[in-house]
Image (tube, rainbow, N blue to C red):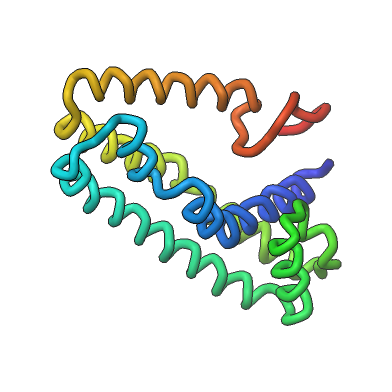
Length: 176
């Protein structure tokens, strides 16, 4: 698969995650803070101390999703937008492959994805550090130990999936 195709397939996954998954995540699993509250048996006071950090990050992600959706509307035709919406509703992967993108649209998408990727890793790490710092200041030593164990298990599962969210099984031949 050439780089542009890989980029577009990755973009299709991002569309699904950025637009469809957040609502489903909240519906099926609850917020990350709810998960921590139940897993670590957080007190109401601890939740109150952590809530502003999680709210701030959630609001930032919502703004990024809205900007993403707005950009997609400038690149895709109304018919293509509808096809993407239908694919999201049906939880289909690879939605961009079925859109018959023009060369100009492909170039715009490539440029957009590259601009989005720059700085994301460091931004995500900064958010992770912000959360970890807040947890360190809020949790009891026992809760912190359990949280660190949870993080280690998550990293292990992530590595088993080849470092990709929602990916099951080994990476495809030549896949990056």
